[in-house]
Image (tube, rainbow, N blue to C red; front, side):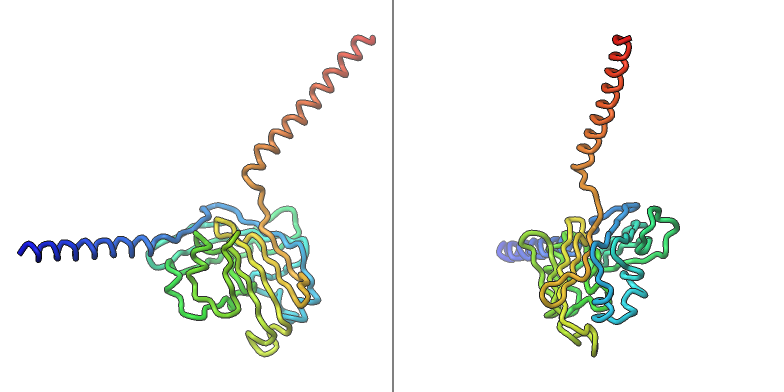
Length: 250
């Protein structure tokens, strides 16, 4: 009788631990950004002739690259976030690529949805439905999430330094004539799951598209404030000294 009680106790304990582990695993991925947070990207390089040649002349007519060109910026503003056992959802407003100094009215609203557990995706996953061929945002911790995806042969996850997606797509691999040349993409993400750097290469490692997350690190802000205060104080002291010198000279 005692043996049965011990066996049942161990069985119950085992099932309880498994249940706890399962729940923790299902909920370990979340969203690294916050509501009302603004995300801004800047395009440093855009070889439009090469992009036309590789993806067709309408590559910038829609999607995340709509109206993209060198020097322009794009903004997202997080509206709300939703996390449950099944999905991780990010709702946001978009201000498309522009060279204006003011953002004006938003262009549209959008959302990104991921499964809460990366193993819920099918085998040989790819992001060919994305114009950029990689997401601009992932759930966090981003390295573990990307590493848990069963991606197809185009993608290689590198978490040695920063969470990185290395992409190599051969000519005609997506559709006949698309892309028209072999391409490589290096997409680096920060700890919030935000695309920090996006570089698209052609043969010879020639960069034809370079997009970066445009942000000011938090640790830099106090330094800038300190420098501005010092600069203003220096001007005030200089003016006071100059006035005193004039008074004494008179």
